[in-house]
Amino acid sequence: MDPKLNVTAAPWFAIRVKPNHEKTVAATLKGKGFEEFLPLQRTRRQWSDRMKIVDMPLFPGYLFCRLNLDDRMPLLTTPGFLYVVGVGRNPEPVDEAEILAIQSVLRSGLPVKPWPSLVVGERVRMRDGPLRGVEGVLSRIANQHRMYVSVTLLKRSVSVEVSPEWIQPLRSTQNGFDTPTISVPGSGL
Image 1 (cartoon, helix red, strand yellow):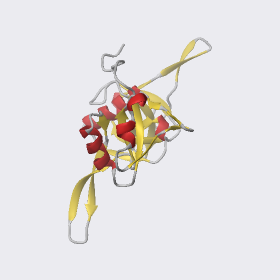
Image 2: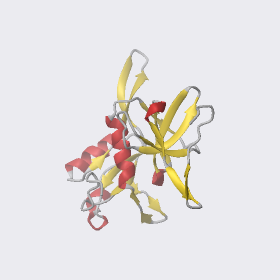
Image 3: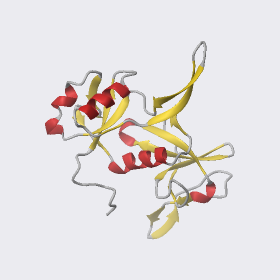
Image 4: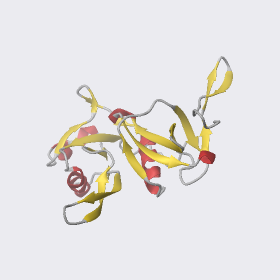
């Protein structure tokens, strides 16, 4: 069992918030004692008189919060909170491994950018580099290799450029044989 996975902690949930209220809601939740996670990206913004580097949400309109659903009243009364993301009226937790993967990508220091939807590709694990052990989906864009780490529940992903030497294809068993599940057109992988 991975020691990073704390099975005694409440599960992570995706929280939908009003537009441009992500940072305020995250700060309020932290003040109320919740463990929150707001993935941010550094981006350049142009104003009429200057250019400025600002931290913007990687998933606009969303943040993540560890939550015991029996004790959610303080969350429900938070200004800017809209709802807990789920299926129908049932809140669904976000996979702990997906949260850890997003956190690893952000800690890596590699440039990241939001990706509107997951490109159909193969699952890979990074065997080297600052993302060692992180799993995601690999795609080839021009001459770059990019890995996408997804939050399945939100149907959103983040993209990070990786070195081809770091990539290890995950294997699946088909008819009792290990078969590679990765192919990147034109890359020789």
